[in-house]
Length: 107
Image (cartoon, rainbow, N blue to C red):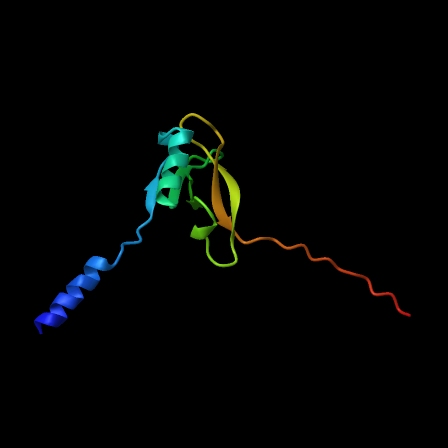
């Protein structure tokens, strides 16, 4: 019985918490926003909409492709920061493929 309790407690200690950090980019400089996303790998950035301050916008921003789901790629995005209106960051996005229609001519 003791062995089971020890094994269970070791599993809980070894399990890593995958909580994602949340930040308000408008309270930080652009460099700080980029540094936090780079340090954490992925972070939620929440800010008020520039068009309608009653709406809160948020999304998940990432350091590189390793933090994206399979089939997604890293894409440039911009968020407002304390010192810039458009701070460049990256988020995951599914690529949009062009559909090319070919006309088949009869023989």
